[in-house]
Image 1 (cartoon, rainbow, N blue to C red):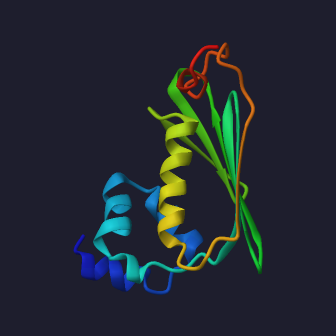
Image 2 (image 1 turned 60 degrees about the horizontal axis):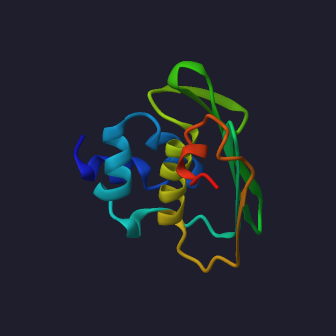
Length: 140
């Protein structure tokens, strides 16, 4: 789909709609982030971002003056990740909670055009856990 068509469709979209559309397929994801131009992206206006990582998943919490949004990512069996956003579960094959959360965080930060007042990262797992996230930590 040409960029001009995507720009016209997404012109009235808010951040949540753009994030949801970016999950449809890789082509939409690339076009939303790179094709339509960052100046066309809606501003998220987040004042706080909290990232919480645990052995089987990650939670991203975004606060603005108007509302709080939470996205949760859980690693399931057989290389499946469960992404929960606005009470909707999406099962994605061939990815991990870490990969999916960091991709969403990258997209969300591209939407952020105002100053972020607070960023918190909490990590709660052990290198002995057999999870993709734990394998990133060096053994003590």
